[in-house]
Image: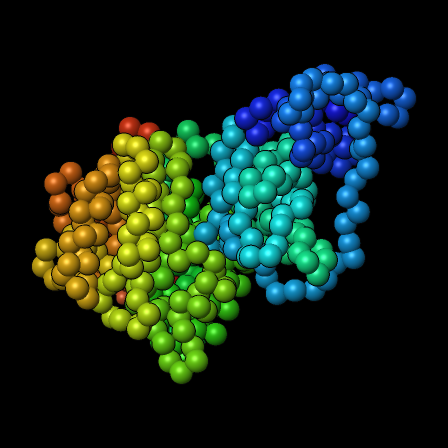
Length: 403
Ligand SMILES: [Fe+2]
């Protein structure tokens, strides 16, 4: 066991490194600062600052006894398979969010034969083991009133170098509907293979994954298993109007949240702000776009943070000047005004099932055709670097020629 001082949480504190497992944990929760750890035989002493001043103290290093484990449904809200954490190798820090009543205790990244320890401080997660670039499963241990719980979320944490050029493959309007179109299984796998041939940094699916509420169980189970099996890069998925339907007891938004986590989210990567919206944000399963006031407030805060270059992904395009894809014109206008308040440079949409380019002041708004239409497969390739947009093109996967 090695004791050391680090400022993981913005001030000097003593942490313990278990040299066998690579795990790191903070020593004190109750003191404001601690310094100069020293060992006397098996006992650890530190200079610690409490509310009354500096003092020397021998401290307890006994570890929390974890277990036995209680079985529960998934308690992890974020990150998830379809909204993974993008973690820069120089920062090695990301956010873990659990459902109410659960507290993170420890976590690990698993993949490529490696297990990398992650230290949890509330919602803050810090990779403490030697980190290598890659897409990892997140194993998390949490505590609740009923005991300890464990969950593995596959391919939900990406470690990488954010200074590199970013290659994004956008897929949209898959409309799986596997019960009536089982051939879409093969089509979607070919799409993923085509996307992989572009060596993407990330893949984004901009909504309408399923076709209707009665198909959600089959379509979403397939999406999940296909991504677990085939994804080699982070895959972000946002809902479209076909994913937001209500039918009997099925409420699209609830199904989505349980299976995929957040409906809208954002992060920073490579000098850009990424925003993923849920434009099917009504309680009624509307065909046209809708963004709730709650989401609008979140978006206002996101784009108002700074003047970072921003790229937006959503299903319905509020900038389309030919058709209006929004339920209420006032809602569309408010969305446009909020987006104008940030430094939005590029916005990528689906829903329309055809290609279109709209210019709105400095904003380039691009709509992409259906990615899976029988045997016709296509996707959008977008390349960004720190300076701006490098390339935007429509691509046909090589695999589609053999279908
Ligand atoms: Fe749609």
